[in-house]
Each structure stands twice: as C-alpha cells, then as structure tokens.
Amino acid sequence: MAAIDKPPFLSAAATAARVRSGDISALEATEAAIARIEALDGAINAVVVRDFERARDAARALDRGRAPDDERPLLGVPMTVKESYNVAGLPQTWGFPEHRDNRATSDSLAVSRLKAAGAVIVGKTNVPVALADWQSHNPIYGLTHNPWDLARSPGGSSGGSAAALAAGFVPLEIGSDIGGSIRVPAHFCGVFGHKPTYGIVPPQGHALPGVERTSDLSVCGPLARTASDLDLALGILAGPDADMAQGYRLALPAPRHRALKDFRILVVDEHPLVPTARVLRDAVARLADDLAGLGAAVGRSSSGLPDLAEAGRVYIQLLGAETNNRMPPDARRRIEEAAAGLDPGDGSLKAIRLRNINLPHREWVALDDRRARIRRQWRELFQDWDVVLSPPLSTPAFPHMLGIEQDDKRIVIDNQEITFVDQLVWPGVATLAGLPATVAPNGLSPEGLPIGVQIMGAPFDDRTTIGFAALIEREFGGFQPPPDFAR
Image 1: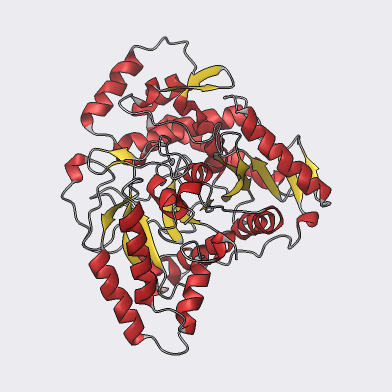
Image 2 (image 1 turned 120 degrees about the horizontal axis):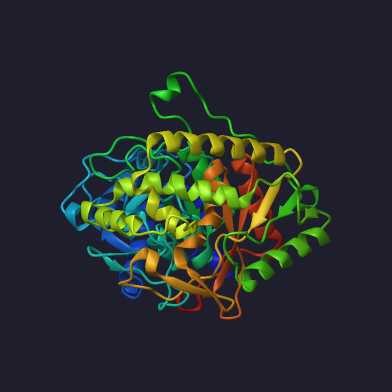
C-alpha cells in the first residue's frame, strides 16, 4: 500500500468512508490529526490557531448522533481552515497586529457548509499580513516553513493551508485566491488547489473585520491531496447564498471529456511580461508530450489567445485598486510617496502597482471594460480548446525573504533578475478573466522541490479542470509526501 493510501495521508473521501463504515470513529480521526499536529508542526508552524478541545467535542457529538445511514460527504473528516475565515470564537486577524484581539462571532458561510457536511474543524492555518505575499509570515503567528525544505516558503497567502496538507496533518483545506493564493502554495508544496470560477463560492465571512462587501477578483476555494477531494469540496462549497438562492441555482456542467485522449489542450508556457524558469517550462513541455503520446490534441499557439501583456497590465491595475484598500494608513502613505517620485514615462509593472493606490473610479470603469473584452476572448478561445496548461508561477518554492518591502524584493530566474512580485501576471491570467484554474502536482525539480501545472478552463467549467487534474493524477501520479514527513 502506497503512503498516500494509508494514514496520515488518506484522502478526505477515504477518511469519511472509514468513519461511515465504523472502521474508525470521528473522534479517532480527530485525535490522529491532533497528535500529528502536536508532534510535527513545531518545525513548520502551519496550524497557528488550535481549537482541539472543541474539535474533540464536535467529533464526540458526531459519533453520538450519527445515524446508520449517515451520508454526509465529510463525516468525521478533520480539517483546518485559512486564518482569514470566520470561525465562531476563534481569532480572525489576517495577520494584522491591530486585529490581534478580534474574535469571530459566527462561522463564515464556507465553514458552515463544511461543518454541515460533517467536517470537524481542528484549527486555522497561517497567512501573510493582509493576505498579500507568497510567504506566510506575520507579527502575530510568525513564519510558516515548507515541509519540502524548511528554508523555503510554502507559498501564500494560503501557505499554512498547503503546508498542513503536505505534512499529513489534515486531508482537506479551504483557502482563498486573488493573486495565486491557492495555486502558488499548491505548486510550492506539491498538493492540489482549485481557484473556482469567480462568484460560485460565496465569500460571506471571509473579509477583514468590519467589511461586508464582496471583493473584486478574489475567490474562495479548496486545497487537497487528491483531485477527487477538490471536486468533493467544491460540490459542498459552491452555490448561491441564502439570499441569492431564492432566485438562482448553480448547475456546473460535467467534465467535457472522460479520457485524456479526447482533450484539446493549448500549452502556454511563456509570459511576455516576465521570464519563466526553464525547469517550469520543461515540466509543462514533458506533460504536453506525454499527453500527445496518449492521443490528445496538443497545440502550442493559438491566434485566439488574448494579449497576455495587455491582460497582465489590466490585472495589475485592478488588483492594486482592490488590495490597496486593505492597507493601513502608514503603508498607504509610503506607496503614495513612492508613486509621486516616479518618472512619468516609467511603464514598469512596479510603477503600475504604485500608481494604483488612488485609482480614480472613471479609470477603474475603463479598465473593467477592457477586462470584459478579454473575458469574451477567453470564452471564444474555449470553443476551440478544452483546457489551457501553464506554469502556476515563474519559479518553484524560493528561500524565505523577510524584512524587505514587497516591491524591493528581487529574484533571479535563469540568470535574469526581476522584481519578485512581477510574477503576479502568471496567476493573473485566470484571475482577471474569472476562469476556473486547478493546480496539480507535475513532478519535482532537480533540487527535489515540487512543481505544479496550472489547468485553466472556460467559465463554469470547474469540473473540466478538476477532472483533467484527476486524469493526469491517475495516469502520471499526483501527490507524494515530503521525505521528512512521509512517516
């Protein structure tokens, strides 16, 4: 039996099946997760809010009240959730010291749905301040490490989520994504992550304290160690909230195909605005060659592909307009001062980010119109192609970079130094257009670090991208435990 087919690396579905059959109790599953967190999380610092006693009580209640025919899909499955979600009675800070004492008074809608499906919430996982980094570090909870290499980042902002999965603490997590915050941690930690079509998972209860508006661009979605668990979780999380359900229902279509040979696959492995490490491009190319060998139609160019350079710039501007609202006053002042000192002719991505601290609404509307045109182009492209494969980011997991302002961080990609955060344009491809995007494991780098592949699909084709990830998982392999946490 492979390591991923037995505890502590069982899937969520397999764990629920064992509880349902009576092979184990919900309390036993919960105690196993707690014991592993207590034994191993000291090195990682992923589960930063621990709610073990209430988790034990919830598991006991499940065991006492469970009917013989209980079919709840997550029955007795221990879970953690990203710190930014409301869980009644627990801290919700987004890493801001000024919110250190904030306690949620009710569960977010996503957490309510997970609990209703039988999940047991054992704690919350680490995030960067304002969810605004591909590292997971903040003044309240400290730094989270990658289980594959403790000197490297697990990603962000759902970095604690992906690290907890990779280390075998829990089989299922829920994160959020506006700049790759689900997809980058999945890529860095060798797990699966899904950024849903924009709007299909209601975000209620995932916002800074006191904020009720729905965030532009941002989505809520699952991370897991198997593609099938992503599909299971999406079925629980997706669907209109109570108000919208009075007039709407969600009916996601089935996967476009059931066999890899039937897919039309477009490969996009280079971005015009940033370099992409050869190791990432080679991994996508190998997968594409393997898929072509199975009979799939694989293309490496398309006249219907939107202009990625234009889309990247539009995305960076809209992202800045949205996320700058999360910044404390002192941070905003620093950005305003930096923007004021820019050369008027500076058209770099860094300059675009800085200038959007105070984007006028008229300019936002013009950008939104350009976004609508790009979305239409993607819809038309997916009439000819079923999925688009790309790298999730320009690099594998990088060493921790602490104490440096975001726009001052630099990274070297194949001997070319760039501003670290310019890599945002890769996850922005799917984010700008509201596309579903699934990240699946796609081998290891020569350094032994996980590499992921991003699978993008047409709006509402979430089950196609997840289904494609499941097919490549079955054909070529998926999650494997980090060597130091494989026991």
